[in-house]
Length: 311
Image 1 (cartoon, rainbow, N blue to C red):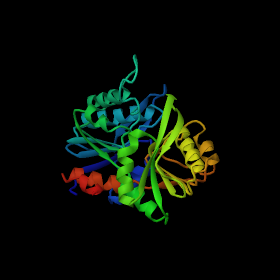
Image 2: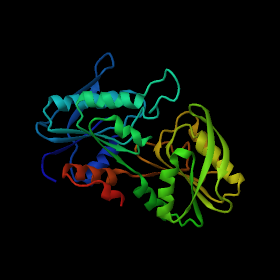
Image 3: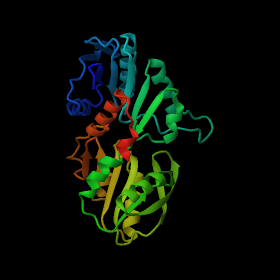
Image 4: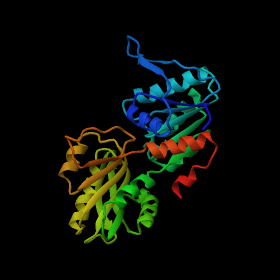
């Protein structure tokens, strides 16, 4: 890499930013963030970034201040004459409302796209967007990374036998099929109904899971209702070991309590969102994204292909 790259961290997940910087053997840019007396976010960049290739690392999970801080940092970089500003978003908040599935609802995923573009971002590097079509909401370049490489490395070390990958809904079939193929495993599907947001009822298991080691694959664990109901249904169908794998550990509400009480023996997630509540749920195992994100940042900076990371 040449000397024109700048790594900048927001306050949402500084540990991940530091790990990325360590992998790239770089220092994070000196950015001062704080609050005005009324609680508004204050940002000051203490280094010259004129003409630099800037990467701002900031997931936008709740509270909404994390998104606001990212927008303010982008604006600060734009006004400081950065050559290119890439928003590195390990978790893209407000991405679950990506279409009008009923009257009088917003498309908040598109709204966030508009905000990022208006703030001055030239490019977005995202990780496991909730819906692939969100890339099409942008009029700037978007790269969407997948967790498959880091999860495969971890799962292959578990010595599972007679593995079946389970998609918890129809929308995850494509991802589940790809993951199963790389593991030389079977694929099963959970047929579910969602009567209201953050709520689901498991209806049927499509596929043979009896006596199998199960990997339930999803992108987000929020309330853990879907994944724990699926696990209970799989166990009732004779599944042997059950491991849940999900990219984003949102863990809202009583999710950790549900996971503790479920037949799931291990919950494998990434550090896209920081997690340190191991005393509340000892089943959680966190795999590190810093190498994957670091390689992607380096390839964007050097104008190289990112797709080779997943071949």
